[in-house]
Image (cartoon, rainbow, N blue to C red; front, side):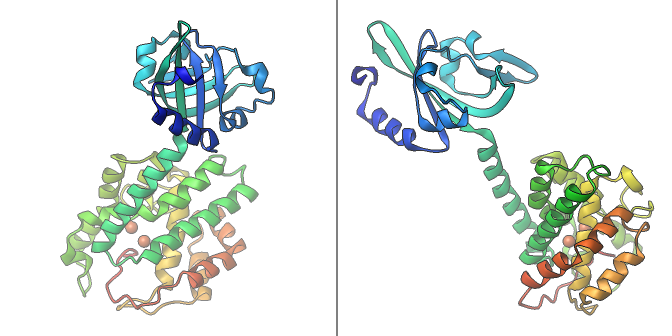
Length: 341
Ligand SMILES: [Fe+2]
Ligand SMILES: [Fe+2]
């Protein structure tokens, strides 16, 4: 085996990868026969009898090229060596996995060429990049708006609780909610107002009643948010930014959508955002306590809010109260909040 690898440094690196739980490593030859794989690989692909797997063909990796799926086995070695986004497929149990894979030439011995592939799950990398982008955007929008760091954290938390509750109790009414939906909304709800980056400061911080024209400019933060988010992340973030001011009865903005024309994610964030905005004190308004806000939300059942969401909110109202109290802003924020106007 020593002659197989070209350099000590590669061996050292591979030794580290062997022990990794998250990086998968596999060694194969030019016939694509498997010679070695690490424990993480065995665990991920549920390979119980390691010896039985050695000598099998490493053909279950496919390259995803738009909608066309090219079997790994039909790629030239040169193309494999470039490294690519692939997806793997186990025909035996119909399982699919998505990876970045990098394949390297390892060396030659007894006329057999060896290659090794390092696979990293795409979801981990993408999630990390997405979370960093979300943070950067939210921070940028907070420089302009009054929303504090805790406000956006609370919106994520309420949205998480409400969607999880819907998933557990009303899955027939909201079939689009699943674990991925819950995970996504609890990360992207915070970006509902990033469009305010495009709203002039003179309007956002105006210490007086807004004119109709100024209010129309504020409304554009939904369109700007959708424009920004359509450039960078999935559909849900864009939908929330665009539709979080729509109302169940069709009296919201920007499109006066009604009922289930409004995406569920935006209906959830709408209730979360209004709850939080009413709990906060502002120069122009006193903070309201939980009971008062609950009363208001109940009074808007079927008007501003989806009636089933209001019922769900009531069922988990303690959680909303808890989130607000645990993540309450310690320093008084004296800038204006016109989110509800
Ligand atoms: Fe907003
Ligand atoms: Fe907000």
